[in-house]
Amino acid sequence: MQVSEVKVEIAKIIGIKAPNRQVLVDAVRQVIRGSSEPLAPALFDEPTIFLSVRLDICGSLVDFPTEADVPETSVPCPCGNPKHWIIKYEE
Image 1 (cartoon, one colour):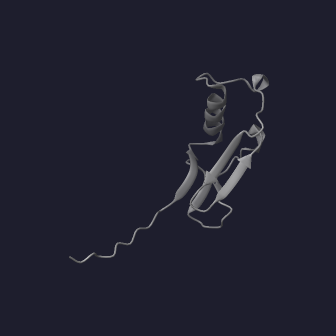
Image 2 (cartoon, one colour):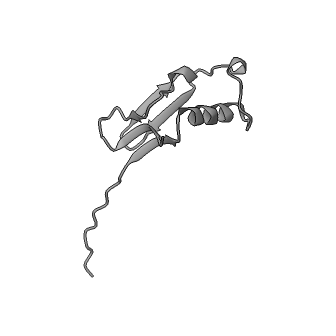
Image 3 (cartoon, rainbow, N blue to C red):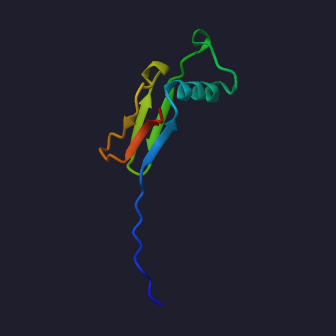
């Protein structure tokens, strides 16, 4: 029996995929508070790290310490691979 070589290519590695920043921020807030209700910013206590994203495939780790640090645009991975994304917004 002969085993043939198979080439596999991973199109993209994305840490977080969201429609936009607001959806991402709302989702993180809900997880932190354990609530399905949106929270008013004035009532929200900032955690030590608001959001931390790790790509195990390249070892990259990016922290967003506060809600204000969550970017408005997609964030490529600091490893430099154009197929790796820390955050990828769909809109």
